[in-house]
Image 1 (tube, rainbow, N blue to C red):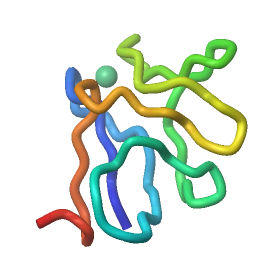
Image 2: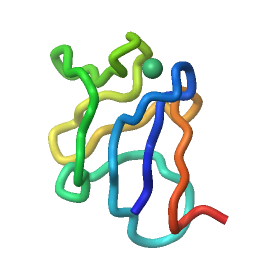
Image 3: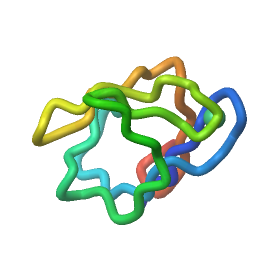
Image 4: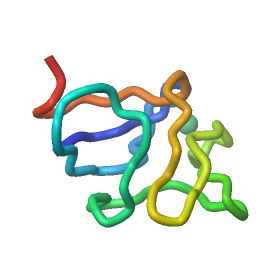
Length: 75
Ligand SMILES: [Zn+2]
């Protein structure tokens, strides 16, 4: 389980089940366990206003520089 946070204000954004290795570029919606983000059309934002990603229906394409994450898959 990954906890994904805003790089700006450190608020929690998602709890996410990551499968496989590699960097986190997008979040499959079916693997999001908890969602604390604010939706504005297809934009996904932190409560502080930071843009987190773009909703592309099956997944959210993340802005890698705007998030931090930690959890079992991180080394
Ligand atoms: Zn934030």
